[in-house]
Length: 62
Image (cartoon, rainbow, N blue to C red; front, side, top):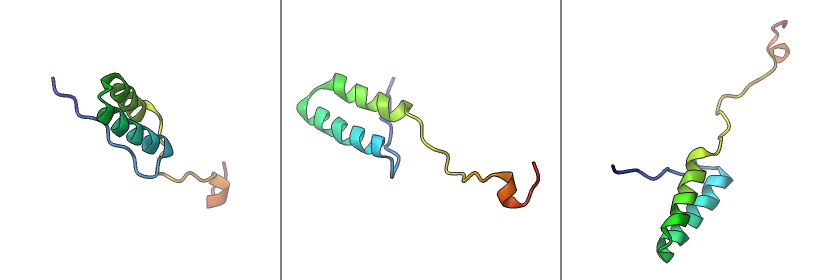
């Protein structure tokens, strides 16, 4: 089974660090470190792009 590597989310510092570390590990020939970085990119949470505001700020009584 072919597994595609996860893509780093633009603007995410965790993704950026792990993406750089993954490239270094790949160049050094350390597949376990590459797999670890892939797992970190794939599994850490990202904030929702939806901006949430309190209902009061929108003029809606809660």
